[in-house]
Image (cartoon, rainbow, N blue to C red; front, top):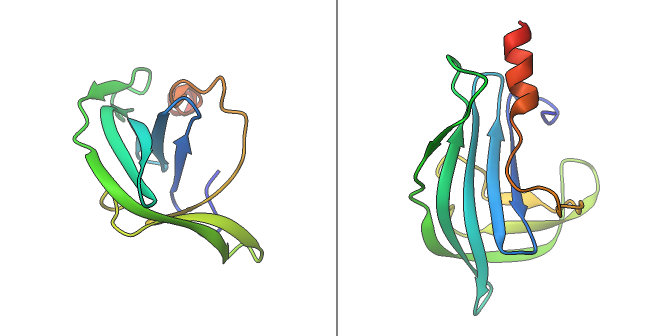
Length: 131
């Protein structure tokens, strides 16, 4: 799950219906911010957050919800770049980070997201309970 040498992983998902989420997972924290997205002029990306999900350590079976504060228009660039994976990859790069503490760039992976409504934390919850 985590990249080579990493203790955490974050995934940024843009669904074709205009919904998306940023999911962050580590052995200690599970967090997701849900948002709506649109593309503005001049390669600017509008993000409007509507919910934060967090799986607390003390109650690993139920995600807590909180309102999002994400609301902005961000300049982005999409281009092929050399990556640490040893091969070129299409990369989305933010000129200003929408989320503090997260990456300013994300490699593209194409997957079928038609059934991905929200991040699914159930596998992490089960693992925590089994410990």
